[in-house]
Image (cartoon, rainbow over all chains, first blue to last red; front, side):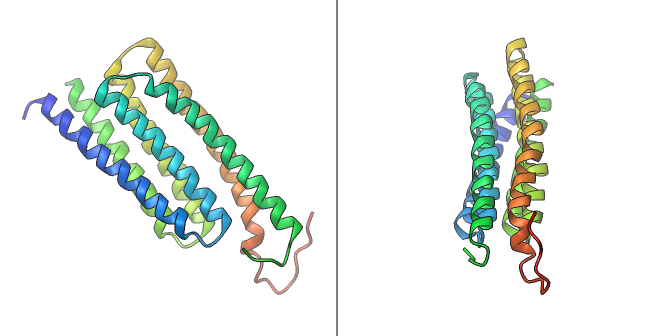
Length: 99
Length: 102
């Protein structure tokens, strides 16, 4: 097996693994009992999509995907912070309610 | 030879991303799930981005990859800290003694 073929094969394998991790994180997002679980799963999905952008950049040579990854990291951080603030405020407002 | 190096980085990154997702699914608690998602997930995507930088091998790409990795490593503990602070009261709820809110 030449190195180029091994690279092609490992690109496919990495695609499968990263997509699988995205799907598993989505299962936790759908199942999560509390709001904190869902926020953690959404954070995990953002990181997985950044990894997908990196694999696509390797597979096709389109290096504009790295800009997508950078913007996605920024937006994912903002989403996490906003959702965490929301959960905290909501918890402080109705203290004996469970969600 | 570079192809082998890129393949090793890609496979390691995919493996760590998969391990992080399995940890997010299987661990029993919010804080443990956060532990899996922040550390292993950031490591996996960082390894894949390093493979990307080795593959494309230009200065702009490498600078962009370094910026993404630094940003992820800088912001992920902040996000995890905020989620943990928001959900630690939920974990403490079964305590008989009521906690005083600050």
